[in-house]
Image 1 (tube, rainbow, N blue to C red):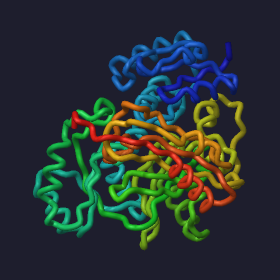
Image 2 (cartoon, rainbow, N blue to C red):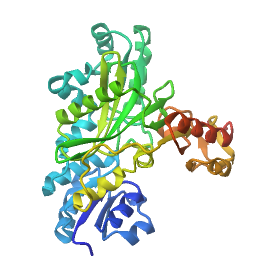
Image 3 (cartoon, rainbow, N blue to C red):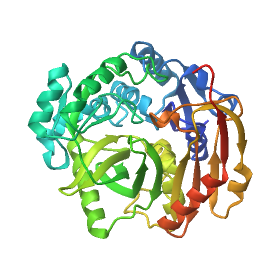
Image 4 (cartoon, rainbow, N blue to C red):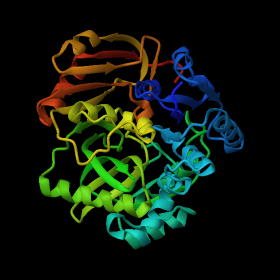
Length: 412
């Protein structure tokens, strides 16, 4: 067995594969239903529990550490960042602390922290209390403003409040969503909500990796969204000018310093407003939606591999930003809500030159929901091309070749 072992919290099977490819032993902490025969063939040990329950996780990882002596703890999944921080603190493993991970997970705490530590990269924000708190925030900060869950992800529950005429409806939605039993409610409960100033402008994300306090931006990603803010695609590199990119990188560097990210990956979402870039939210993990794969296709830098294996010591430190060698884009597939009756055109889309992957897990009998959050999207296409415009166009062409036919679901 390897002399160096890593404790991996959750995440996709590629986490484990890449750690093994780098010569690391793996102790795997995962939800029981997510463990597969391939995991069993790769890991040294598996702890199959609800790792978000610290009363269960703490004694198990302490015992596993005594038995297997792992030297780092990592995660690439949002549900794993706070448990990984707790484990790092408990065992003094030197990763991102629970305090920092919680600051990034709790959007209200992050805004309050930035108000003192880095106000120029943030916006005004307050917690929703009663119905009148909405009125008061609109009077103080104007319209439009945003209402969203403090602990939410995937744009679920996010509302744009454009005038005081909407406030009754907004309050009714908050009341309905609080304690609602959505599919990931165990990990991301919709209980507390916050209000924050609306930031207009182009949506971007900055993918970075921090080496002992030194932040290296590896890519700036452009986001494409539906009207309700759910992301419908991404492209690397973002189509922005050098001055704007320099400002975005400076904004995110200041932000990462302010919140105390000292090592590992980060995915920071920003908007390029007329007042300059402003941080929307951030995560001490690689970006979702397979942005990590876009970054690797565009630059050759595998942020997922670095996340799981750099603490083990065999990967070289990145001295500067990797050069862009081609553009990479993804576009999400959609269909009319209802029950799927046919899926056609996937092979034709995959045959297009430059299409890297079509990930479409639906099949006849699957149910298509209206697009209310990222979880309602059907699948995605990934493509590469010489430049961003061509990569986006190729994704659109591939999506147009795929037909997901539905019929209204009588159960609805």
